[in-house]
Image (cartoon, rainbow, N blue to C red; front, side):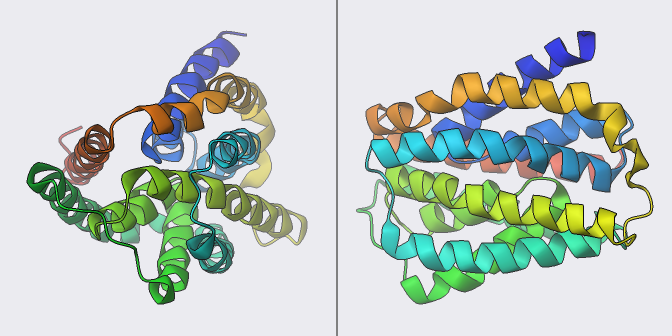
Length: 258
């Protein structure tokens, strides 16, 4: 029961941040699970199982508030599903820590770019659709391997390129549901086919996953309303600060400072 209540609070707070800024649910939840000694593949599978429910609720909120760019949505989903399935398959067979230094470097760079754009206050410009598929591919792969990373990777690229912060967050979060469902299905397939040998610990963390789901579901419906009401420049600063903080945290862990 204590695990359930703790992760209910974690899920609520993580989804509140994710819904408002388009990222961090997976990263925050995975970090807490890993700190409890949960193996990386099990942590990623647990978080994505919870996200199937929370991203559905969050996506519905963003669609209802009409802050989704449907032209980018389809190629993002297509690329994200392919990348997510590949990343989940890779994670159940090899050590995903190899990618972490590159992810931290990318997030640090994009965080600084976003903060610079917020400071300059430049006029928003559309993200080129032809790059949405490859961006989704990378974002899905990073999300599966890192136990979270779709939002930091995809949303930071959209906002960093100069796209409107509101529609970037709404589109990223709405597409995430389909990517998350694909990753979860791939973990399940790996388990059923015997490719994933260390999955027996999943049931040991059922209460934690349930807490993440319930906490996230309480918070997710507020996502679209929050993004629609908060000023664009404030959202841009928030995205930049969060991305930079995540990069700093990942770097500190890699250096052994945490």
